[in-house]
Length: 128
Image (tube, rainbow, N blue to C red; front, side):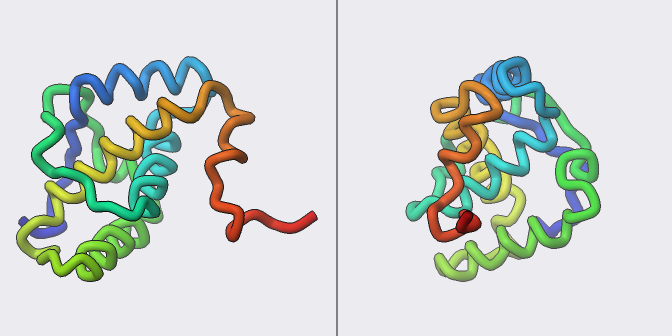
């Protein structure tokens, strides 16, 4: 599948986790999903594309990624190429797997907004 998908449906259980994260942090689902996507892309192992369903919340892709859509998709494509995957064949499934896994991972590490500092890798933190 190519990059022409416009809507994204999350896993049903991940949708519940996203709602809980929103309540706990006060952040919108699209911001949380973007952070989760990047968090997952930074993980050393690839996500399992068959692990998640599409029975949960459906979000417009532009709402999800905003004006930085091209950047996020380039990051996903680069990760796929690094792993020897074909973005022209697996992009949608791989993107969904990273998105779901990222939100799922955040839910286990973030209980309020102040926890976000703890999930940023040390090499990306600004020295004071």
